Image 1 (cartoon, rainbow, N blue to C red):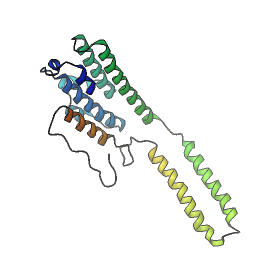
Image 2 (spheres, helix red, strand yellow):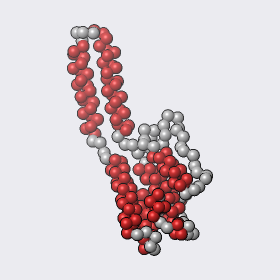
Image 3 (tube, rainbow, N blue to C red):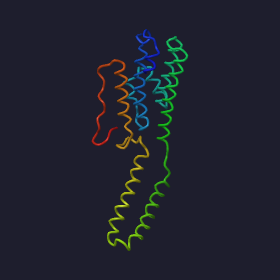
Image 4 (spheres, one colour):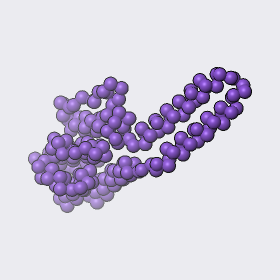
Length: 213
């Protein structure tokens, strides 16, 4: 949005169509939509709060809604260029920004779709049990009955680490261990709406118990 505000002439920004506001609100919608899509939620209600009816209908018709919002960004940049509000260099700069957003979308989807094989967990458990067996043979003649609490503590540590790794392997499960994409989207919304000069903006999301979504 900062690029568009710096590139587009004031008379175009002040037009009734308000291209800068449309761009900002669409970007806010993209942030929320990306997070909800990655979590397997329906972003329809969220999109309705930020998009005009025409863009909303177009987005609902697309399977990949975050990508559809980027397509609308691209169409608006093209329109501004054709109207003479942007020169070729400025259009290239804005397109490069959209490409980076598209790359971020692809990377997030790749993380979401990465599947850890079942053998991953089995191998970890096998080597933990093997280590505990070898450790017990080494301790049996040295610490006597203290071997039992030592083995239990060691085993608990390794199994807790393995369980933590399983919880963190998918950061978009709509669970307390998620990446807080909704909170990040709210921060983006606050920043963009303040750049637009709006006074009434939502408050940052507060943590629920011990986690932030």
